[in-house]
Length: 359
Image 1 (cartoon, helix red, strand yellow):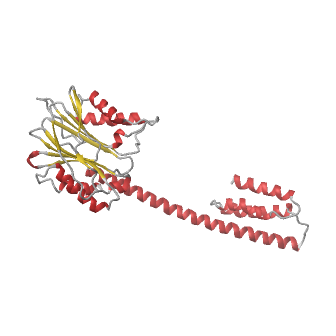
Image 2: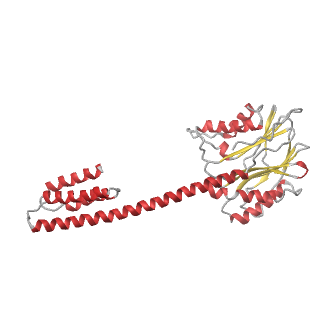
Image 3: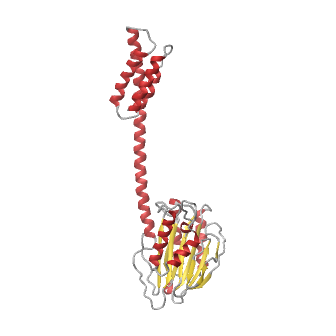
């Protein structure tokens, strides 16, 4: 309102200075600004003010009927402009209301989809004597493109998987069910890990049409023997931390899944000893940046894990996550953060499993 009054005053001042031409059309600008608001009575009152100012200050010498005729035409012209702009403003407000309602509806749907996605992830850790397992997925947006799971296998064994779909958000999240279904198709077969990944690759290749790919690490834990048979499909290598020994990086496998229909994958095994800690992670962990554009890095990940290796698997997951957030200076990372930690307890140590994981 104040801006409109200032505009009218400026036009009136200019109208009083110019004596050769009419500046009446300039009053349309502040009147249009006023018409964009909801104050219709005020707008039409200002139309009358502008007509009077223009007749008083404009370059006219007419009186009587000529003055009345000019004033009526000016009034009609200003009124038409104001009404036209008012209609546009009403239409704009209605469109904004529609957009706002659609935005709220989309936000609600995304929130519900996020809840569904979280329910697809493990709700509690497996209860395996002598072994602790914990994991979490913290999406950078409402929906995440990361995935992890614990899969029950024959003879009491366990499948471990962590995956990262290329891209972020809704499109990436839509591939999570495909990964889950394809992996669970082989749960009752004795297929080695590379065969499971090969089957998954063919399924995703048919679904993606080469527009997306997935980095994935899949492993089968032989519980009685404490061995891990694994295949790494283009994923960041998980690491096995051992007491007073160098780290073991699990790199054997093949390319990412979903791009090459005839890709071949290798398998490898590693023995898990008492005190070993296995860490599976996605790039949201090691690629998290601070304000100096430094990355969290695998070196920091290993350092945090070694420093806190005496903690439980659940505590270790939370410690790594909080260390990443602290390093980045924010809990809103640019990429999804997913972690899985498996800890082999020393002999004669009880495990504390079964508690719900942090969401």
